[in-house]
Image 1 (spheres, rainbow, N blue to C red):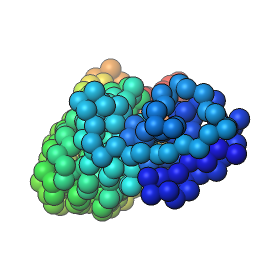
Image 2 (cartoon, rainbow, N blue to C red):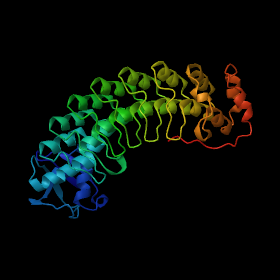
Image 3 (tube, helix red, strand yellow):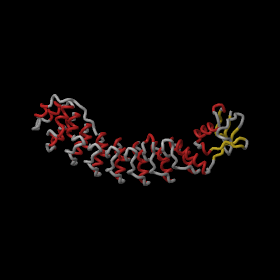
Image 4 (tube, one colour):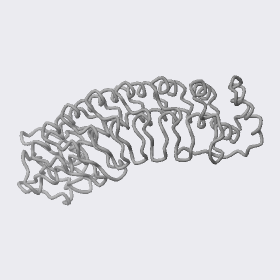
Length: 357
């Protein structure tokens, strides 16, 4: 049996030496038991310091010494352990020990993430607070699988409300964009995190930013059916008629995905119903194509008639509906319209796909 004792003689571990290939493996076991960072542990045998790759001798008793400070070189090792282990799994004691010893706070792991990013993603509020208090960079961007997100963007995406509030109060940039051009507010809008969306907008986050596809937070809320967030965005003055790189608006997205309440919200708020995408398609045409009769009727009732005429290249409402095989349901819903005769003329129109752009 191999015994490991602290400086005061207390027993820290009694283990079988054959369970550990080397000293480093034993240190990792002690970290698991007592939250002592590997980079701060020094195991001593009969007055001699052991190296990490030394073999464990079952015939000896080892003493553990914990370093209270580290050299500049060791601070990089401590920083690596901070990001790769302590902040990632939420070990507050290990995090505190590493930082007190001088670990570098802003080192990145192989995915470009810092300790603050890992803590924000994992919801480790106390670690986030500790890192912020010690000056960790709040606005660094990751790379790799997290697409260049900031700690705030990660917290917003994971619905870590307390961490979002903490970072905002600490002065984190609320409008930083990731590699897809998305802000923290956009992530909240995509995932339906209403409280976070409100917190960000109330703190001054812009509603006008567009991602790499030209979509705004309002467009994302409309596409994903998050009526509460869409209503908040409208209340905070989001541009209802902003268009993506393909010319799509929030109203078109609501119409295409069948989100009737959002379509009604946008119409009541004065969204332009006659805007066209780069292919000449309107919100009413998207509703017709996908068979969303409630939205189609809503838009017809407020239309000035432009959508109901044959337009350039045959991209009229009636062509869209006929192509999508939604002729009869929509025709039944539009019997009061003077253009209903057009439906009967298009019964043989070929079905085709009208993708969102």
